[in-house]
Length: 78
Length: 78
Length: 157
Length: 157
Image (cartoon, rainbow over all chains, first blue to last red; front, side):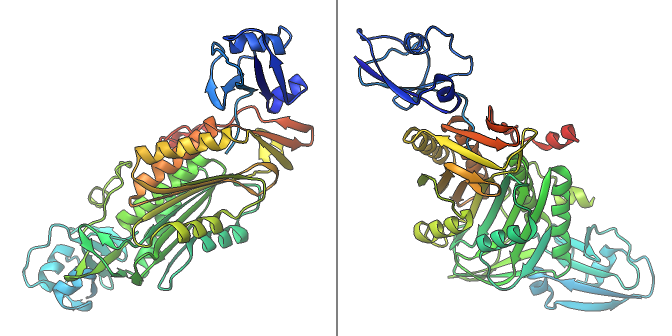
């Protein structure tokens, strides 16, 4: 299945890319497992925020094909 | 001594005048005594507000010549 | 700081922008909070078509200024603008504008709310409304339940 | 209710007046509270000349709208307008406008403050500031310490 992954702000700088499509061979992979794949085994930053399909969620969330996952630092709008 | 007395809003309607000058023969008359003179012996309304020289005060305040005394109902601005 | 009580109608948003352009250096304040009170066609169960707003020239301005100075002492505020109508008002017209500039939004909110609440409590204005039953003096303002106001009686006592 | 995230600069006061003219019947609301956040030339001890504001198209609007709907449920609010910039910003320019119309001023103040506070907490925006030392991502927003902000000035004084 395909997962679209997006990185914003300092997370994009750190990853060196804005987005990518990740192909995984099984349903039900968690956000944390996805993170390990895209980040080459690095730990999740403690302040990392996660959205799946534009809703906030946490690292234990299980993913399905077509999901859009976003990783980004604390927000600073307003 | 002369005291200028002003009435605003519903107090002006009730008194039938906007202002008057009251001459009293002694210093140190209180606002309450002044009220009894101008109101023909009527009691002070419970919500009556009093200003002397444009500052809020109470009925026991003693007056001196040239003071401007204002009687008015609760304020409703803003 | 500027406090004006005037008879002619004003556009509160144009006045806020104009005051900011003339008095606030750009880049120093980070937060502006404005409150605009407008005339409703309904009050206290009565239909209202027009309103006459009486005031006490001199005392009114003095007490609004005092409230603004208190707000500027309590909070970290860069500037305050207050405009208030008197005389004849029509439905929908702005009655009062309070605009507060600050570096911090919490201070701007608190100071703006303080100014309008204490203006309503202390500044000598009296509303006389034109209703189908005739003219009537408004007897009391509604209090802001969010603020623990001291009360005039205790202040003057 | 209207929420717009746009690149081009806006005049928050003209937009508030225009929205009111188009959407609010005169004489029904009695209170309008606006918050305008503007770009300062100083932040967190750094001199700032320009700023780039990144956002997440789609998610950002959705979360601002959710915050506005929450405010309209919690308080007696007639309408809410939110405008927010993204992209390149210069010193002094408005970043965000929150305008709230209500029959009651306490509701307008509470709802406006709620919207800006939760917008800052949840809407995906990221500020990147241009300082003499180069570009830097702003790492956190300052929180609103709440209604009891009187202590702020005393502590910082």
